Image (cartoon, rainbow, N blue to C red; front, top):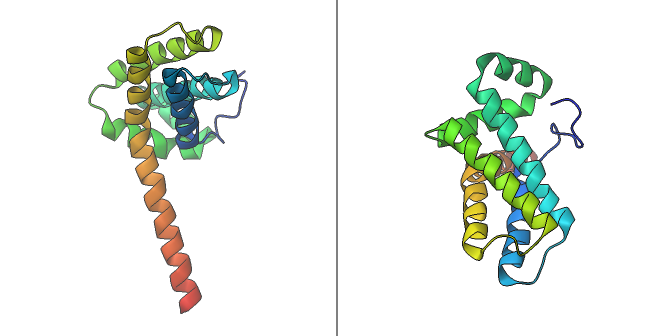
Length: 149
């Protein structure tokens, strides 16, 4: 966690996933993508690997939750959606390497591999997206009830 180039606490995995999948789709079509948008994919992978690692170690999980309170929800949501955390961690490390390869050379991976990368990122972030969307709807509903009472 220390020495990272960006602020993990303020990372929005859903936004990072959206931007990364859009950039990968652009690469898949042959249109190219900016290295900055692909770098968000590396940030996303780092965030997901941190969540997966903290979920697999109860001591690290307690420490990370104390430092980054928002991570506990993401880690819990992620763990509930996965059957094998270690397999997901390995696949995420591979996806991070593929994205790094694509930053250096956009033609380094086939469209099938790019589709696999997108699929993996969507599968891991979809439960977080659903949770955030439902929390947003609940807040909006509570706010409208408060205003109308």
